[in-house]
Length: 278
Image 1 (spheres, one colour):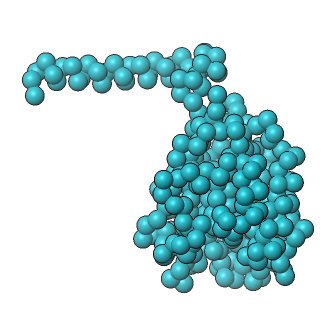
Image 2 (cartoon, rainbow, N blue to C red; image 1 turned 90 degrees about the vertical axis):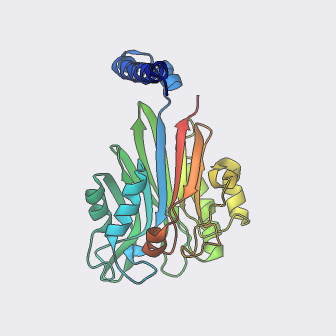
Image 3 (cartoon, one colour; image 1 turned 30 degrees about the vertical axis):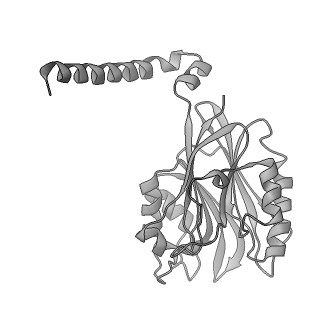
């Protein structure tokens, strides 16, 4: 490589560095619309059914759940099947413990009594959670209470509604819960960015999934590689979903499939990234 070529490469790298550095210095002074055009804010989310920390190998380990999340570095994580002070969970406050390990905020929803404690859902966030609510579904299956967990955060001044759910393993109950879910969501975020994720325990051919897909974009349906999540060892079913509304544009979606995630739980986690639409 000639000296002139090296000089040109160095000059190009320095120019890019100066432009990025300069933009970061003045972006607070620029109108937000201009900043969003030049560098649109991005949000990365994960949905993960964690089976109260017990893996397919029968080993209880929150540490490997935390490692899987840390390796992907999402801004928001929805966790279903997470326990609070159960015997099977070694009396751990699992959501609190994971959040502390990852340096994230959290909210936890206790849905039903299990094994001396509670089981439910949690959301972890790298951003402050300034609103959280848990809507319990009327439709349950035996003692299997389910719910829709909802938080609101702001990202670069833009409000984002993040919903997570785990529906019943009973197909009739899960279908009815899906109807309730849509009713709950109508009350929020009609003119704001919305992301809905979770373990729906229904395959894409189910009528209720088509109905949810009518109101919200099923991001995984457009993936180049099938978003198969269950069972984690050799996934053949798509049970875990990511949806969004028109205020967000998905840029990527994929399943985290490796030796660790195949052992950590019966479902594989799904990760998606979005940018705010113009």
